[in-house]
Image (cartoon, rainbow, N blue to C red; front, side, top):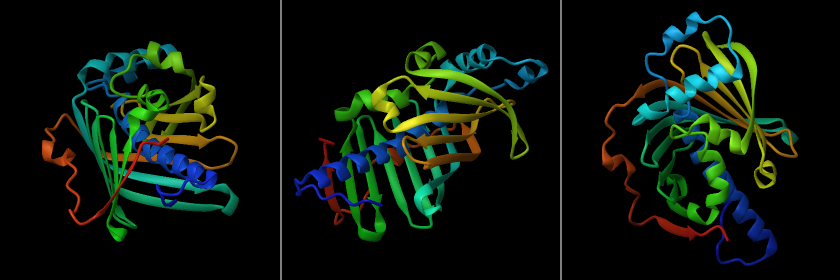
Length: 255
């Protein structure tokens, strides 16, 4: 993982800082969108339809928009780096609420916590006892492109920022899924992510997998979600910055 050195002012340090910031909120915000965008309780009857189009899938996603409050799930984050043919995997849990609060607790292989509350994003690494705090508001225009995937956003708003395509049906982990492909319309976003694929469970209308392709490389990162629990009360304490008082605290505004 790239390390942040805020006291350095070289061009290389500036680029490293921006890359670190972008990947940090990619992980947090994209996971958030992946979990929320397609929730449709009681939608199993929809499987009775034998023909599905992009419009019918988006219609089911639209119907789900108003009924999300919270969600917790097991999460697996896989990062593939093409130049060295290397795959790294983190596993843990994610907790999400509709009010822009989220916590990811990675347990393996190395503990790491990502906490988002409003425009603030914290990354705590126990191994080095360091907390990095980012102000997402300074990058709101870029973040919003990804938030459009979540929080019950209507398909018409998604279509303002993405070209959408239904790539058919696929069985994944014994689940029938619909595979959606999203291509960012924004030149700025496409410099980071060339396209996104989402696997939407046809019985629960929850995404079971989401894959992000980084631009200009063969790299990608992928999220898988299991053991989802919907609308259970998540204590406010879960979204407090409860990091050790003696941890090194670094602030960045992403500039």
